Structures are given as C-alpha cells and as structure tokens.
Length: 259
Ligand SMILES: NC(=O)c1ccc[n+]([C@@H]2O[C@H](COP(=O)([O-])OP(=O)(O)OC[C@H]3O[C@@H](n4cnc5c(N)ncnc54)[C@H](OP(=O)(O)O)[C@@H]3O)[C@@H](O)[C@H]2O)c1
Image: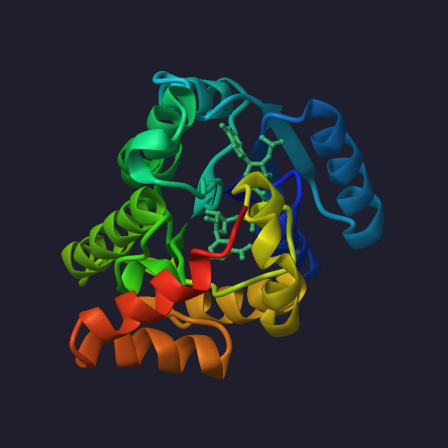
C-alpha cells in the first residue's frame, strides 16, 4: 500500500497530520531531524492504529535532501500517494538582524526543500490512481508581517506555488492543496523567538489535532486553499480585499512588543 510522506512529523502540526492519516488507516513515513522522537512516534502510531509507520531522520535544509529522500524511499520500494510538506519555521526580528544560518535555513526549508520535494515526487504521484500534495503555509502568507517579513514571504511563495501547481494538475488524479493555519499550539512560537507573543497567541490558538483534521478533510476534498478556523479564514480573506497598509499596521502593532 502507498505511504503518506510527512515532513516535520516529529511534533506539532506534522505529527498531528501523521496521526490523522494513520487513524484513517493510511501508512505513514515521518521525516524530521530528531531521530529519537521519530522512532518513538512511529512506534506509537504502529501500536495505536495498526498501520505501517516508517521514519527517516534528516535535515531538510541540506541542499540534497529531496534526492536523499527519493532514493531512500525507492531503495525500500515505498511508493508515495500523499506528500505533506509541513516542516518549516519562522524567526522573529528585524530582517537584517536575523542570524545568517536562520536566514538561509528558513528559505531553504520553507521554500526550496518544499518545491524540490514536490518536483521529485510528482512523477510517481502521477502514476497513482489517486494522489495528493498538501503544502503547509500560514495565514502570514496573505499579507506582509513586519518583523516576520522573511517568514511571511516564504509562506506567500508556498501559497502561490501550490495554487499554480493545483491548476497545472487539473485533469490528472493529483491535487495540490495549501494549508494556511493561524496560531496553533506547537513548538513554533518558541522556535520563532516569539515568547512575548505566547500568552496572547495561546488565547487564540487552535490545537494541532483540530488543524490536522480540517487539513486532511480539505486535502481529500482537493481544496486549493484550506484555512482552519473562522477567525483565521476571515482575517486572511479581509487582508486580500482591504488596503494593504491596514493589515500591515495591525501586524506591526501586534509583533513589535518583544524585548
Ligand atoms: N504553530 C503555528 O502557530 C503555525 C502557524 C502557521 C503556520 N505554521 C506552519 O506549520 C508548520 C509546522 O509547524 P509547527 O507549528 O508544527 O512547528 P513545530 O512544532 O516547531 O514543528 C516543526 C517541525 O518541523 C521539523 N523541522 C524543523 N526544521 C527542520 C529541518 N531543517 N529539517 C527537517 N525537519 C525540520 C521539526 O522537527 P525537528 O526539529 O525534529 O527537525 C518539527 O517536526 C510550519 O511550516 C509552520 O510554518 C505554524
């Protein structure tokens, strides 16, 4: 049986998506850097859902990551019918003060690895009777976000790439959906150095399990865009129709507080 390959599946939204798919009896492959976490979660998923759960520990910011994953899967005869590009991170701060490693690493992970994985796996997705790509963006994709400028730009890339891909794939059995969550209770805020936002974000945060359920329902319905939660949906849609400075000013006020 084909597998769902999920990146960033050692925790947060990626792990919740892997569990949601496994609960629907889909075999899964978990990818992230933390081998111990991957081993532990794969074992739990096997026991809890009775599906096959494999894992590969690797750094997706490595320029050869997509080739390594494709070769690893091919060498084990794992075929893929669902590709979930979820791994990603943000880094709060002034654009020119983001550390060099984070600056490049964010673009490499959020955009390049995601695009390369779509490209590497599309030939075999097109051979399946039904197949799906789910790329994880953010509500930040719908507007500029001062002090998260680079992150928002990487997520706008994901949104436009996925929408374009979905059009290109019309008439085939493969669809591409873009998931754009708003605040979600995961390790994201700590990783983004956004601790000052934590209390406020937690009030509005969705649970990763809820985001994952809505994401997988939307993916199977072949929706081009999935924005979980009414408030998130409304703010993303308003950002598309009101003058750009309005949501930008709101974001500037919201994110300036740290330190
Ligand atoms: N949480 C939110 O509020 C929120 C809102 C909008 C969008 N998102 C998006 O949702 C996606 C998932 O984030 P999350 O909230 O679940 O955050 P998270 O809890 O920090 O999870 C991120 C996942 O990505 C993996 N990862 C990070 N860097 C990696 C690398 N270089 N190579 C391989 N795997 C890597 C992490 O595992 P390892 O550390 O083990 O590698 C982890 O499994 C991201 O694309 C994020 O931008 C999150």
